[in-house]
Image (cartoon, rainbow, N blue to C red; front, top):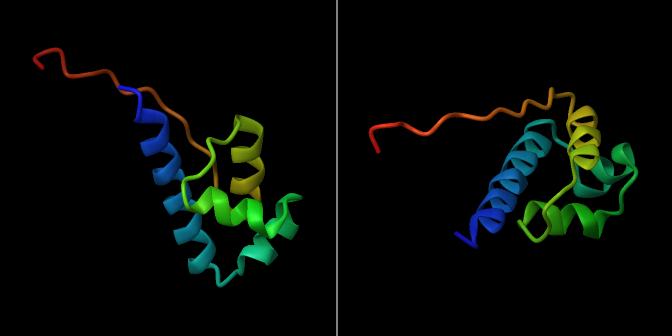
Length: 78
């Protein structure tokens, strides 16, 4: 399934976008909070990049959120 990273990047971008807008932050403000540039935030929110774990941690911190990563077993009946 070669498009899984792309789907994950889009989902992460949507989550960051939703939290950023919930907080009333611009892309530039979020970028400043986490040491990035506004175009990087734009690309990330559009699903154009697959972030590293340290970047996800910085974004979560800048958004006043906890970063939670989990593995969910597949349903064995499937």
